Length: 282
Image 1 (cartoon, rainbow, N blue to C red):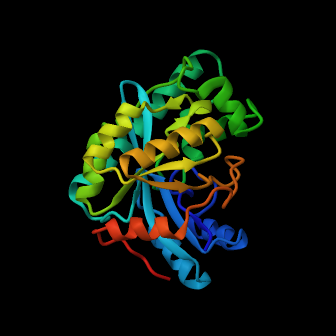
Image 2: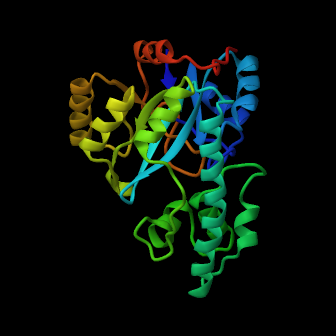
Image 3: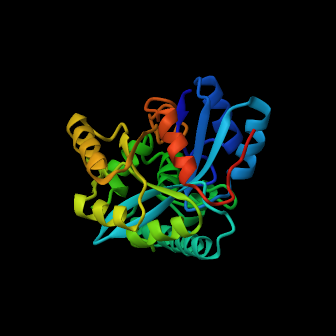
């Protein structure tokens, strides 16, 4: 089995529709794919339909945006109930906050003479998708300000940029509790992604583990060898599973499907912990 448990589509900030992500997964030789768009389940139905046609297995998921003391923390939620009121309300609040945040970031950029408009950014967001900084990046590419998303983030969109504006995101411990209450299985995503400025302290991961965190995404292109060793040891000490995945975004990032994968025994462990109603079979 070849299992990739972290991918994105046009339901959030990926560049390919959910059905296309599934087809790309088939072409890459995957047997199992998790669709984990930011703060939404919107892509699940289309992805599930595509898996029925291809035979690949779908693990429905969400990447929940969290924050603690100014540090952005991402939580992968596998197999949660998509109708759980508290979790869905929190995700809706996050999506609404993202909308207003983009407008404020664009206003700051326009004030500095950067060739970008709110309308231009909105044009990059698929109807109903969770908006994010990659959509500002795409608008900058379209306007000819930058060559690609990487340049846009480096020049304008990093967390320490003068144009950065935060958005609502729950504390990671609360997010773990919400996912568990929804019958899902929470796994922290790329906690030592130093290149992104997102290094989550061990004490925070320990708090999350006490609240019900099930695993750590250890094998990820943003983790160097030292980070992999450290996180593997931390997971063992806390009794957490270790996952690996691509964090695929289509042509929005260089990440390739299946470049890091998760063992079938780990997926089985995740599925055994799920008590929600989100399992989708092809």
